[in-house]
Image (tube, rainbow, N blue to C red):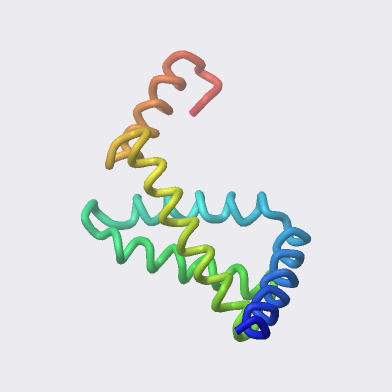
Length: 118
């Protein structure tokens, strides 16, 4: 069992170094962008469909950027799936289930205040 854990940690370690080198911030920006696109694309209630689309699009992007293979790809996909769940839960907890509408409402409010925002 110790050998398996050591191998898994070695894979995870090299993957984390690659992710860090690619820029962790880029991953977060991509995830937020895709989550917002999914919200605009599907009506409410299609949570699993939205999540699967975001995960698929993120993995396509990660395949281009990191080129993970085998076990590294599996770990990365699991981690990204968890991040997507976390983003959506945080947004739902903070803004309610229709947070895209809330964001548009805030954008309209700000554009009324500051004509430079459009």
